[in-house]
Amino acid sequence: MTNEEIVARGKELYEGGIRAAVESGNAGKPLAIDVETGEYVFADNDDEFTQKLWARGAKAERYIMRIGARAFYHRGGAWINQHD
Image (cartoon, rainbow, N blue to C red; front, side):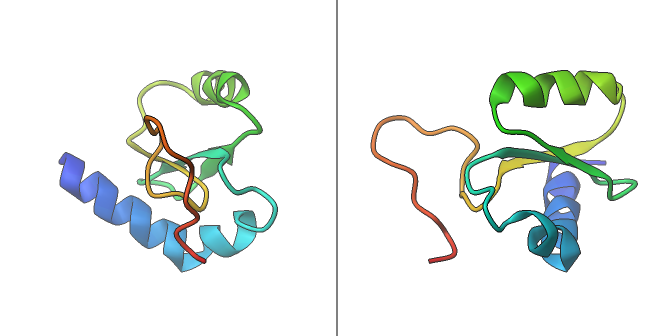
């Protein structure tokens, strides 16, 4: 898959049901979606998130995001909730 296809499929899966399952109370937490299986993983912090990803194997095509945010990381400023 190309990067563009991974992003499109990840967004489709997120909006198609994952968002409703994870968004409440989890804003800003890291989330990865396997774009081939639809399985996803999220965690309270980046270290735990990384451990969970490695435990699932390194070969999957994943769309990675922060729940309720436009970017995974930011420089300066503050987080802005994209759904407000």
